[in-house]
Every structure is written in structure tokens, then in C-alpha cells.
Amino acid sequence: MATVADYIDENMPRFREELLEFLRIPSVSARSEHRMDMSRAAEWLADRMREAGLDVSVEETDGLQIILGEYRGAGDDAPTVLLYGHYDVQPAEPLDEWTSPPFEPEVRDGKLFGRGSVDDKGQLYLHVKAIEAHMKVNGSLPVNVIVLAEGEEEVGSEHLMPFVKANRDRLACDYVVISDTTMVGEDVPTIGTSLRGLAYLEVHVRGPRTDLHSGSYGGAVVNPATALARIIASMHDDNWHATIDGFYDDVEAMDEYREKLKAVPFDDAGFRKDTGTTEVGEKGYTTPERLWIRPTVEVNGLLSGYTGEGAKTVLPAKAMAKISFRLVPAQNPDRIAELVEAHIRKVAPEGVEVEVQRLHGGNAWRATLGSELYTAAERALAAAWDREVVYAGEGGSIPIVPEFERVLGAPVLLMGFGLPGENAHAPDEWMSVENFEKGTRASARLWTELAR
Ligand code: BES
Ligand code: MN
Ligand code: MN
Image 1 (cartoon, protein in one colour):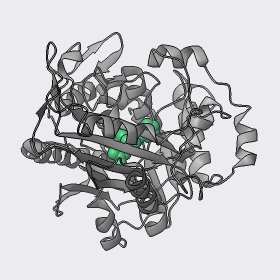
Image 2: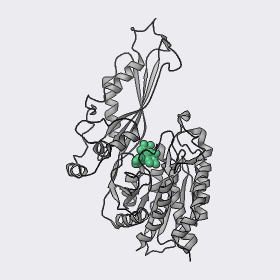
Image 3: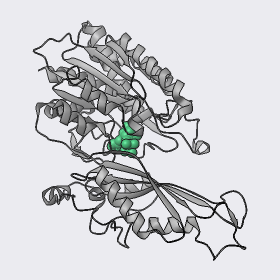
Image 4: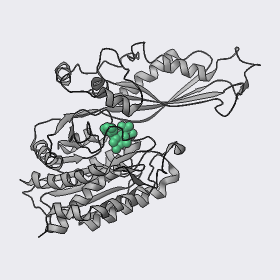
């Protein structure tokens, strides 16, 4: 009789084709014009989860749909695993920077290119396929499984938070498993040990009633673009240390962890190749420290004045910036937003009006290692890659993770299959075909390991 591993190998070409189909649905959560696509993606995934053998419901919220797939057949003695992922993707712009169109995925050079390929559709879908493999081969799963897929991760998981609280009994579980992070390098299976938090703001600066002739009025009124540039520039000192009062108050020292981090080899050449630039950051910290245990101030977008072809002499009436702050334990996103607002009010020059809007936020997270969840994952990953697992921090954020631990009381495992240079959130996002395959095998193996 065929094994689960055989089933996965035999059906892999079909799994890949299905993933391409999933990627063709432009499920961009940030854009209201993609509302229909969001429902289409939710329904598409719900159907595939049903075919895999799960009991599936599509749950309505005040925002986008949440998909729940359940398997309770392993019985009360077996552990229950909650598997979380997201079917929404980031906006694909700038479109003309893509080699192939973002929603017409294609495989080149062992890489599956398309928006959402690695973040997070590919990483979510491989778990569905591992479940299918167990169900088709054995008619059962070794553990109870709850698959929870949301459509708002990329916009802050606003409606998932209350959903988890309201459904804590139905979502009760022993472990949470998430594949939505990256491995430290090719062929190095990685378990993520931390995530940063996030506070996201939009800053609007308004000056004159309308755009003005920069000759007739320039020099006599404050230019909103200049005012905004000054506000932004005031947030760092020359050592790239944030200058916002109180910003570091709640940051934990982490001296012990810093010692350990020194032993982690860092691939400088790889970093330069992936980013196309050199490492520069907060003075006194190494690159892994800057990425994993230090908070940041980041401008995500700037808008003001004339940016078309040629020169236009104009004094813009307004300017806008989207600014986010990556946070570490135990910084609180709301408190950070307050501190930043106070800073902006303090430094804003006279002659312009400044409005600060809060977008989303989330807490940082650090793994509590040592549970059997991690040893099972080590075995499953090592088997798929034929190589020992590495533990590493992550610079990104998944806002629901600390909430899972707080509300459900279950430890979270970050078992990600992304790679450095994968272009997540950027043009030419890709997922390694090999990782999709090995990830599927590791997932299938994890269910078996957890039941031991
Ligand atoms: N998958 C990422 C999170 C991530 C990225 C973890 C890199 C580890 C390494 C996730 O989809 C994401 O992009 N999250 C957002 C959070 C947000 C919009 C609230 C992020 O980190 O910007
Ligand atoms: Mn993601
Ligand atoms: Mn993302």
C-alpha cells in the first residue's frame, strides 16, 4: 500500500497546479476593489479543504471571511493542533517592476513567481495538501486538526482577534502551527523564535489652501513637504537610534540572548546580494540584533507635490507619510503610537497643520521553547531536509501570534518555508518549488510526530 510520502510525491505536480490557481486570485486585502476576489479566494480554499477531508465553514465577520476546517476524528486522547495561515496578499504595485504579472504565476528556475506565492498562500496550501495525503491514504489524521485561514493578516488581523476570543472553546487546542516565516538560508530548516510587533501611523501635513506658485509664495509660507521631511528626519539621530521620548523605555535588555546571538553566523555577502545594498543600522548592534531584538522607525510611503516628468515650480498644499514602528517585547503598540504623536506635535514647525491617524498594531512575541511541539517539529523538518534544524529570530510581525498564546494558552510553532531574497511584499515575489515540496512532507510528518 502507498504511504503518505508516496502520495505526496505522486500528486506533487497537481498540488503545484492547484497552487498556481490559488495565486491567480488577486486577494489583496488592503484594497476595497478586491472584495469579490477575497470571497473568491476564501471559497476556493474552503472547497480544497473540503476535498482534503475537513469539515469546513466559511465564517462571516465585520470584515473579511475566516475559513475554519476541522478534523476531530483522532479522538480525545490525541492532541489537537491549530494550523493558522492567511489567504490575503499584499498589493502588487509597482506592477511594471514584475518580470511576469503578479497574478499570472509562473515557475522559472525552480522558483514559483507570483504575489502571495510565499506569503502566505504557498505556505498555507502545503499544509492542506499534507492533510489530504493523510486522509486519502489512511482515511484519518493522527491528530485532531483545526485549520484557521484569515483574509486580513496583511492589514492587521482586526477581526480575527475578536473571533478568536468569541470562539475560544471551538479553537481550544494543544499546539498552534504556522508557516509564514523564512528559513535562514537555502536547505537550512528553521524554527522561528521571535516576531516583532508593529504600530502603524499615517501623518498628514497641510499648509496653504491650495497648491501655490512657488515663486509667488515660496519663502513666505511653510512648505508642507519640507515640514514633513523635518518631522521624519527628527525621528533618528546620526547613529540611527530613535529620538522619540520614551521609545525605548519598555525594551528589554536581553543581554543573555545577545550573548547567544554572537554565536549565530551571519551571512554578510548573502545579505548584500539579497538587498542590493550594505548593512547600516543602529550603532552598537549587529545585523541580527537590529532585525530581531531592536525596535525601528520606518517610512513606508511618502506623498507630496509634483512627481511627474520634467520640472514644475509648485509649493504643495499638503504632504503625507505612512510610518511604521517595529516593536520588541514589551513595547505596547498603543503606547508607542501615543509617544510618536507627542513627538510629532513637539517638532512640527509653526505654519502647518498636522494630523496623525492610527492604522493597525500588534504585539511582539518570543517563543517559549522546550515543549514537545518543538522536538516533534525538529524531527519532521530534519527528516524532510536531511539536515538539523536551526533556531532563529524573525524581523516581521504576525499580530495574532501573541493572542493565540494568551487566549488559547497553547504554544506557537513558527515553521516557515520562505527564503532570503524571496521578495515578499515586493515585485517578483517567489517561493522555492523545492521548499513547497519539502514543506508538504515536513507537515505530513509533523502530524505523525505529534501523535507519538
Ligand atoms: N509573513 C509575514 C510576517 C513575517 C515576515 C514574518 C518576515 C517573518 C519574517 C506577514 O504576512 C506580514 O507581512 N506581516 C505584516 C504585519 C502587518 C501588516 C500587521 C508585517 O510584518 O509587515
Ligand atoms: Mn505572511
Ligand atoms: Mn506579509
